[in-house]
Image (cartoon, rainbow, N blue to C red):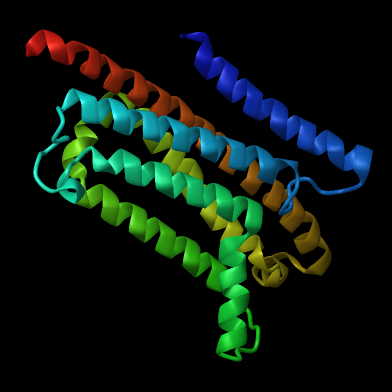
Length: 231
């Protein structure tokens, strides 16, 4: 069990190194959309979806046939993990099929917007909406978060990496900010480098979430196994 964190983090470090190597071997930037990093990220998101689903199943067993909190299905606190599973599947689809970028283009087309430095960051706004939905779900099912206490450091560090990643994404969405600060040539070099750092941080944030959700799933299973003894 102690080897799992080293394996997960090491695998992500290897993925980043491989993406860098593939740039030299193929001439294609595998940190860009639909590259190797995108595929690896989608796989990790699907793993997270699977872990969240298993956690939901174990929590439902642990809390009896009525589920955590009892009452209507949507009021069960264990539903948090089912919603997390659905959310991670959606994020994996977003990675592979660029859903939020497509929404950005659709809004520009429908509203006949001229692309500017501000309107071109609509996809960042959409990501912000994703985050707000996630926060709303966490608040609605906050009673279930007691299960996360032991895994809180992993979740917090994962969120920190995500926040840095989002900041870099905004910074490198267009190079106008970097160009204003550093000038054209330096902005291109720095922008490409920061974009690769951004994608790498995304992978390591997902890795920390995988470790956290793996622990949550094991804890939920333990609670489910112990339930008959308490009956």
